[in-house]
Length: 178
Image (cartoon, rainbow, N blue to C red; front, side, top):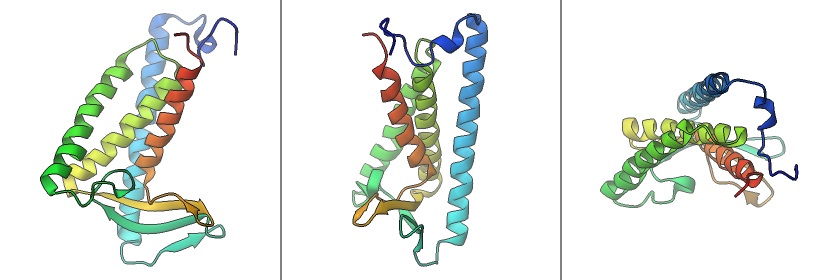
C-alpha cells in the first residue's frame, strides 16, 4: 500500500474528468445491479421449477449441495419461527429501511471502487430478497457448500452477493485514510 494512504482504485481515475468518473461509476453500478438481480431471479426460478420436489443433489465430492428450501427467516433461517407480524417488521420493513440507507451510500462519490462494487452487490441482493418476501413471504434458498462436517447454511445468489459485497466494502475501507 502506498505511504500516502491511497485508496483502492484511486489511481485508475487520475486524468479523467469528475463528470466522466461519475458516469462511469453510475454505469458500472447499474450493470452490477442488473446482473446480480437477474442472476438471482433466474436461479430462484430454476430452483423452484426444477428442485422443489427433488432430493438433495451433491457435486464435487459433496463440496456443493443443491437442495430446495423455502426460507421465511433471515440469514441461515434466523427468525423463521417468529410470529408473522414480527418477521414482516424485521425482514420487510427493516430491510427496506436499510436499502434506503444503502441507496444514499451509493449516491456518494467519495468512496473507493471496492466500496462502490460492494455497496452495489449488497443493495442488489437485498432488493432481490425483499421482492421475494413482498411477493411470497419467503425466499428460495438452494445452495450449500462445505468440506466434511464444515458447511455453510443453505443460501441463494442474493445472499452470496450480499456476503461478497460486505467483504468488498471492508476491503475498500481498509486502505483509506481516517
